[in-house]
Image (cartoon, rainbow, N blue to C red):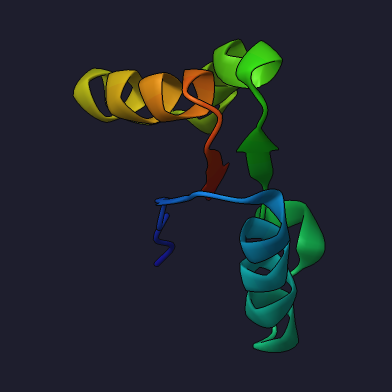
Length: 69
């Protein structure tokens, strides 16, 4: 069984730290993605999130936050 966990972080430093910590737990790096920066809001679409959640995460990225999924 696989699960996707997605969270919003205010800075790239924290988002990248979380990514490294997840990888240290044994999750392959190609399964962990950081999306951030206002110009990358449309990249949320390829995370295959339910529409309502995608809208929330896209808005967060547009506001300058980072998403780890």
